[in-house]
Length: 103
Image (cartoon, rainbow, N blue to C red; front, side):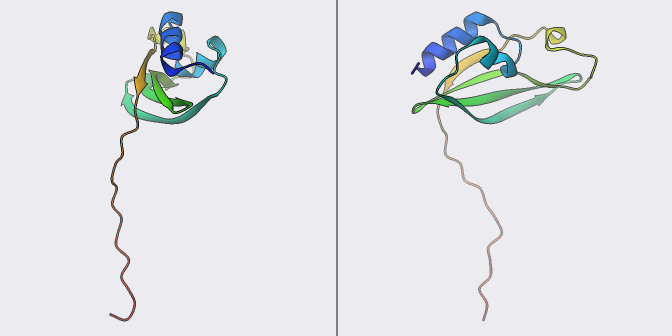
C-alpha cells in the first residue's frame, strides 16, 4: 500500500484539474474518500477539499468539485488541484437537551 505522502506527491505532479479525476490518473488502491470540507462558492463552480484516508494517514485534494453551468467543463476553469497531508481534528457539536419526564 502506498503512503499518503507518495500519493500527495503523485497528485501534485500530475496537475489534475478536479478531485473527481484523481482516480482516473493515480492508482488509488487502498484509499477511501472520507468527506468533502471547506467549500468555496464561485460564480461558475464550487471548490472544496476532498479528504481521503490510506491506512492510518489522511490527505486532502483541493480543487473544483462542481460546475454551475452545463456548458462548462473542468478545463474551462483553469484550476489545478493541490494535494496535501491532513490530520483529523476532533470537534464538538451541540444539540438540544432532552428533558426527563416527571419533572
